[in-house]
Image (cartoon, one colour):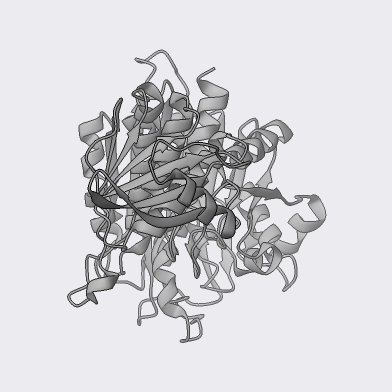
Length: 481
């Protein structure tokens, strides 16, 4: 969907007015009294994300008119308004909507409304060959009648593109998106100035990544490690910020096989890697003044005759040994080797990993928050604040020696699962064992957030793109001030 800005109202088949809370007194239409009465009867008062729709005769033709509420006028309220507008009109038959701001709007407000409209307009129809005519999208363009949002929209459009890329990756089925094809999907980032590094199975074997390779050994799809580096500092920053993403492109559970019902959802077990790739696209797209590396451990977890068995012991790249008691606790086995490689290669001061790691996190928080674990209070606070501002909320969980002891193994350095309770915490404790002394680290368990079974404010059912806006906001707040 195209987003445009114009100082004057263009020819369009639909007219929308962004209305602050409290309503309006005089719209620039001859039918304004009728619209006002209709809106009042429908109890439309301009609350953020609310809307009212009608038809009027104007200039000798019938126009669809939509009033959409911008609430108290914050950027978040304008974003909700834009999303509500797209949700209402996407398949309505409207093709071009012109949006006027009742009382005017700043460039930031206009860009926020455009962002909401763009995010809510994303959908994937790649594999649809038959669709009811009324279900097909019709809305192709939104023109915001305001001064050009300029830099504000340049930034927001890059973020929207990053979120869309993450949603695309998370939505693709596992026969289309697997480790090798995931890498190829990210190649276009090179056109934005991103440096791509790829390690294949042979390179990872030579490096001793026995933990990651153990997960992959049951699949005919070979694993990959993908590093995407964006340097917007012109070489002035020595140590990059590092994002790490779990990229299990399909997770059967391996020999510890998952139940059949719902297993199709495990195509999105690479949601952490998807978020990292989308964040790199957003940062490079808006030329963020930061040096950042996004690293994805890409594997497929399958149960064939060569698959890893419960009870196997593997040696990680760090040299620590792991007793694999459950092959479905595979994400942490991938992350530990990727984190070790990241530290040896880039010597970062900060590592943030994102992973759809545990079902226990969904039991704890449902689909409202992602969990955050951290070894540094300042980093945790910064990420929580960024998530709150970006609409990607986080809730902090504890770490501690009592939990750490629960993953001690009697025959190896550690086991990959603890007891039944506190599963998200023991998973985080496992990862923490691979973080070098002095490195600030945060682990984001986003299992309940990457996919939605019902529409949200800025997404439809399906992939949400969670994590991209959080990471982008964190960079903006802490590295670009």
